[in-house]
Amino acid sequence: MKKLTVLTIAFTALTALALGAKTIADDNNIGNWTLNVAKSKYDPGPAPKSQTLKIEAWGDDGVKYTSDGIDADGKPTHSELEAKYDGKFYPFKGNPDSDMLAYKRVDVNTLHITSQLGGKQNVTGMIVISKDGKTRTLTQVGINGKGQKINNVIVYERQ
Image (cartoon, rainbow, N blue to C red; front, side, top):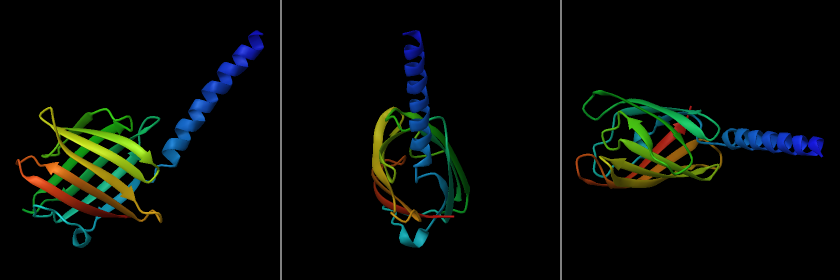
């Protein structure tokens, strides 16, 4: 009886590890992405001059996100986030429009996002990776850090 219990526990643990690894391995959001300003729509503008994203696996079901770019005024930007896909809020450093972000996975190509600024929810959106895995489109609606309504469609290309 003890052997069966030990084997059951071991099998359960291995299954959990395998499913966790599969979750990250099947995450098409992971990769290096470059903003395509021409295909993006920033409402209100202006759009940044450039932006690159580095998205890496983090933990058993999350990502480490690093963004670097040049804003519309020519100033460098940098933001960072480590978040799980559990719908809980995690600190979003360096983003003037959000200080907390929550990710919820819909499927391997789709994420729902919610952000907060100063403890208040301000933006919701969806991230969709194209079926061929080459394009990442972020659609956002809400209020930016300046109090303006936003309706953005931001397109990135895989590097």
